[in-house]
Amino acid sequence: MMTNTIAPVGQTLRMVRKPRQLAVGALLVTGVMLGAGCSSDDSASPSETTAAAQTSTSMKMGASNKGGSAEVGDLKLTEARIGEPAGPATGMFLTIDNTGDQPDTLVAVTTKVSPEVQLHETIKDGDSTAMKELPGGVQVPAQASVILKPGGTHAMMMKVDRLAAGDEVPVTLTFKNAGDVEMDVLVVPLAELGGDGHMDDTDKGDDADAHSDG
Image (tube, rainbow, N blue to C red):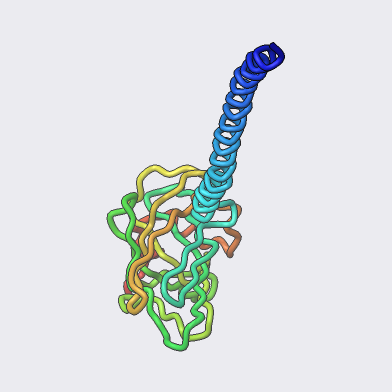
């Protein structure tokens, strides 16, 4: 009698325990899956954040209030700016740092906003100034810096499209050794360029007195 009574009870207890064990196991599996899901989201988040940050940085390395910047070979180009044109021509200015042991030459500048870009030097004669084209380009000595600035050497953009301060202009500079480099250059008000009034001359466009071919 006692044996018959205990056996069903034991069986009943075992039947009750199995569903509890299954329920606990299911909870554990669910917990692992949820944990894996959270872990996957967390691991993806930093990479997405990093990619977004890199994209933002890349955009900022184009044109800024201090001018565009770029690198090619041993050359570092900084503070590139274009004067807001008041006429059919305007100047582009920048600093070129050559960190290498070999000289280089800026031989050409091209942009879709101007059909012709000439490299000029400014020649002063008493109270007057004239601009002379540099057919051989702008020399950039080794371990030295060259500044293209108002009143000095510069890139003259002829017959430019209508530009306004704040515009960004894609420009390609070609160097004899380093090759081509593209950069976005900010158009700035003439007052921000400083200089000695040279931009007043560039604004005259194709005026023969302002642009001497030598």
